Length: 130
Image (tube, rainbow, N blue to C red; front, top):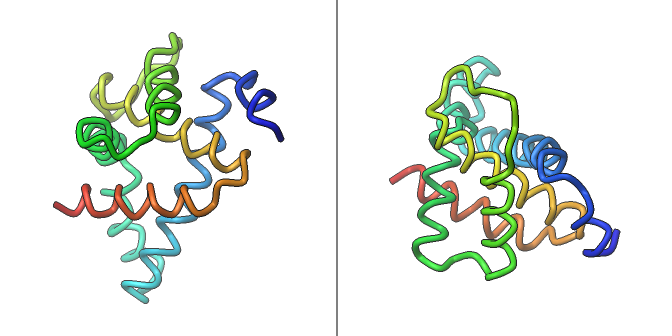
């Protein structure tokens, strides 16, 4: 897909895809670090895939200038998108930042930017682990 075509996709849909992309990356990372049973691996993964963890990573990446201007714009556009869904187990502000983070990953996935996805995920892991 071209960037123009991807930009026409609703940010909620990009977040839907980005959630799956990030989930696979986290699972691979957890299994590489902790070759445990699935239940224990899930317990380790929760902090990375939770809205709070993703929101923390997104905020720090914005504050530290880690994201490109284009990436930050997309994340903020997705964060600010009005939606009727309400988070069940997360702070609403964290939920919105997490949605923006996931939308960014969905966008990059469709654009074929696998190296940049890996860089962002690695940075997110570092931030969440602090």
